[in-house]
Image 1 (cartoon, rainbow, N blue to C red):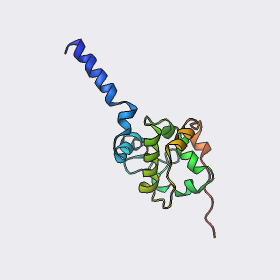
Image 2: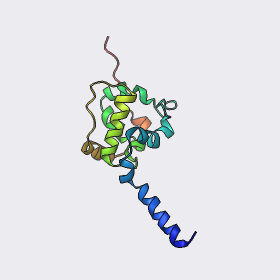
Image 3: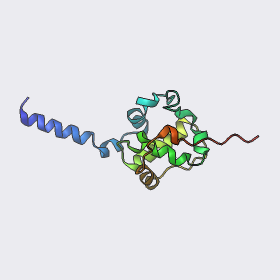
Image 4: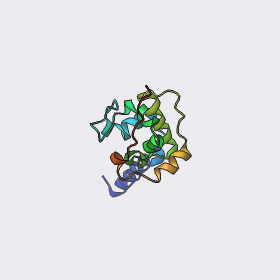
Length: 133
């Protein structure tokens, strides 16, 4: 392969993997690309360090839980724009966790929160409120 051909190939690969190109992929594919590496293809997670995404309702009901979910480093630093990240978070909350009546994230909300990723996501995790008796 000639050097010029290699350069063209490198430029094309860079364009295909840019944030704008990734933001246009379907949300289920975005989950597979950006979340399933740690949480698994079904969202189960691994012990206390990688939580089960199918059980987000208690976290979201806790004070600060909504904000926490965006500020987790893997979420805050995901290589997608804030609108695509809001869509991905909404998918996880509604489709994987089954949370009903969830007021979805907006791009502006996500943009503001992801600017301050958590330094200690395990230690910063909100404590869910106990269920009423």
